[in-house]
Length: 271
Ligand code: ADP
Ligand code: MG
Image 1 (cartoon, helix red, strand yellow):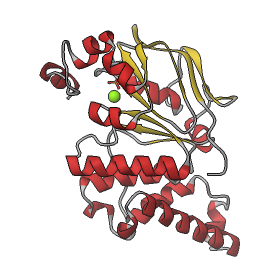
Image 2: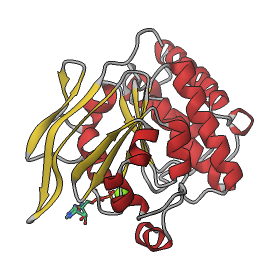
Image 3: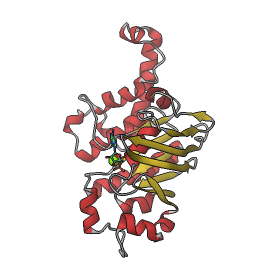
Image 4: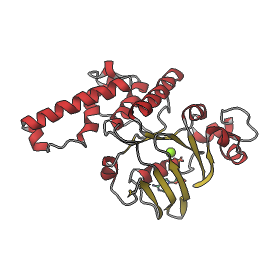
């Protein structure tokens, strides 16, 4: 990564759906190169916030700034090209090999037009070769190197989730938005994904915004945490500060919990 990512600033964002306020004047800043976790109970507005950041949802009020660029009314593909890439909560890999899926991520960056690529004109062929080499590097970085030519359909659940992450990285993002990257994984797969997120953050120097229910993972991985509840920001700070916050314990962890594990009632709530 040649230059550090610009700060991502969410400023006073409000989103309403037919009488329901999904986000109520929410603000936070993602420090360049940090892992910023967005946590909160089910329905708190986390996915809505990701939708605003990636251009899928226009807020009624407020702004999203990447450095001095205003992303608020940009279409999703322009936001992606400015360096904000996301994964979705549910797996959306396609058929084909791991390499094919990563090349889909590279496609948005292709300078050669579709016709030139289809006709295999020399410039286009060279460009495709370059993209494939970079896709391989990203596969190595995300622990998928040995699986590059394997059909995605044959992969384990955890590896498929990491293909999504790798495909988002193929856009060369400066900010990576991860929506529940370890959801449904067993503990071994979770640990691997944590390592991969750490590695890509360090190697690529990007910022990561993380929506995650696994509190243990948030505590281990995040530099800063923003806590949402019913669309409002109820707390923000380091993982330790947030963990001790009484409002957070009440809303998210359940009182008077002393462990990192959500109360059984809450676990049901977030299932
Ligand atoms: P989270 O991801 O934190 O679980 P969401 O952002 O998905 O929460 O949802 C926040 C609130 O907004 C919820 O009450 C949800 O039902 C509502 N909501 C989300 N998307 C829509 C939509 N497209 N139309 C209507 N209501 C929605
Ligand atoms: Mg959600």
